[in-house]
Length: 125
Image (cartoon, rainbow, N blue to C red):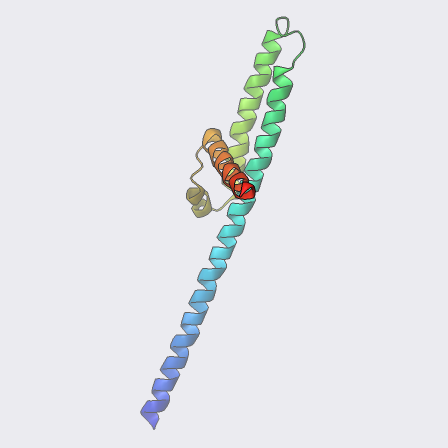
């Protein structure tokens, strides 16, 4: 009888440990998904702001007279893009950032464009 109780205790503890491990793994998966979704939404917002900033620079009055100001604005927009990506990178856990495969502004825009195409393709069907 003692061996059976010992075996039952071992099975119970094994099940409890497996349950705890799975809860942790699934919890991390949910957390990672939430980070990815938030990151994608943030990049989408950055794309929107960037397009508006480009529109502002492209519609600057008297382009010939203000060429130096226009160039300064373009440089400022590029600098802002780099800082935005760096800010996102530092606010997201490293493993999530690596999984998203975003290195710079261009790769972030490719990711958002691809996701937008997939979403629009699903909506058309």
